[in-house]
Length: 161
Image (cartoon, rainbow, N blue to C red; front, side):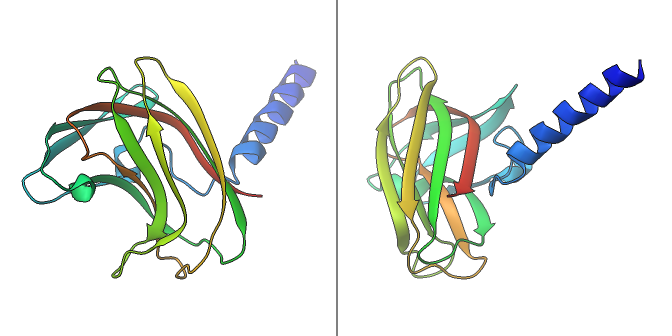
């Protein structure tokens, strides 16, 4: 019995070590996100098992009027990062994912990708080098206001290379 406990402890510590270098909070926790809605846009967020689901019900002419963000990231200039996530949309929407500072002037810091989502979860992985960061004032943004629809995200990680 002691050896089984020992093996379980080793596996658990390896799992924690493999996931502890993730700079982002769990995707399926409401407190991990700040949903920003501006202008005439309308959106909501809910947790569904291991995923977060964003529903954009009204859009205006500005796509960034609906954004889901994870904030307070301490990214460093010149450092390389990999962002990975799984996402889907029953509405086959296109969204933008980027890294930017989380204060005025809101400039991007080396990452901006448009992704097309389908009805099944798809793996996404992007490498980027951060530039023009601000200490502990950077964020990852999912820009959701380009079209009405639902977007599910899970298994979100950001790791330095």
